Length: 487
Length: 83
Image (cartoon, each protein chain N blue to C red):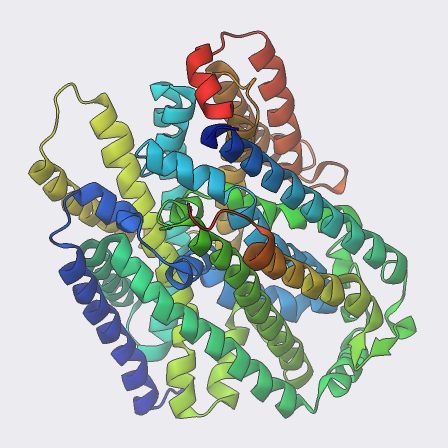
């Protein structure tokens, strides 16, 4: 597809803006007394708008603007049920556990999710196991995002895959390293506004182009009547699977390390409450707009060779060259915000949760700073190398990573902070068992969606049972510690 | 009542309220979609403002209500602004 020069210029200008914002963030953070607290959690000083946008943009990745419209386009109206878990993102990710987690993290100086487990369960082993899970799933997730972004750059600038990959990696690494989480957050605010505005504009244009909602559904009826009713074409979403997606795309958010650590950066409860409300509203607008755009796209473009290209196709076809340049930043913004959050989480897992925790000597603040920058750079380089031969089925990798995090961490978080009876051994074994059940259902010769339910549901059930049973028969922590935490 | 015990009890209360709201939302959506959507053939679909009726009743309306509840709860009901 031919892309106008002005479209490319506007798209390229977006990179420049990101780097400038990161430099601004660097100027603000460079004199911070505690480097790591500032670098990873912004000194716990973020207000509601920053928290809401960095949270929401960390959760929504390239999949939201590329893979998800592809699903909406291909399977029709049943996919709004598939997406309906987004209504509970604000309540599950922020309001349900936010006060408890943010207060605990602040009083125990937690900067990462593994820190949370180490401090709650007084178990270094849990911290290291959690850090290793984060690195494995996180790197896989980042590789899928790098690949998605690289393909967008390939389309837009006509670069070959390797050049596009290095360009993307360089921009993301620069703004993540320079700005830290503050840079990520400021950029997330800009990116979030682009994503919000962009998705609404595209929806309005597309629905108008298609002649309104009634015309859209009439056209879909003629293409395939199953586009209008569940379970959708090819029995896409049986009800049991639909029930499961409320957990995979809703409840699972509370255990995503790159999202829950945003709760650590909240400055006060008032900001947390407002952020929860904002997240709900932002996500509703995003997903409604993208969904309606995709339904209109199906009416206007009844078939497309590669459904993943539906979003770039409708932007370039229907939005004019000026608007297209800005709107194509939206999926890019979604990818970059998730990549930068995940990069921060993986770098902190390596440095704080593995290196510092296992090092026998105290490491000086200056050395920590240098190591942090170095590791973040090396991590970006490793991901570039892995992305040179990109895996197929990117969206499957994203879902696997999300489920992996949720299967491993949800039960230790929920039981750990709301049940006094949870023991360190119970926490560790439930973490590992959740992970193993998920892997087992994917790898073993049994139906992955056992009885129609996503593997995550089974992982959560087994992990919960294991937590309760193992905790009952293993050593509890000291009464003084538990009394302070649960009084 | 000392401050720390009220903090944990408050967090636990919030967890329970949010948990109940979440499960109620999930079950209501699944129930309404099951009743009004599953089992229909596409040619039997009815529409509200051009949108399949099962989607309006089973997803869009519950979703909007959930967002309103979250906003009201978060902005006006949750306690502890001074923390």
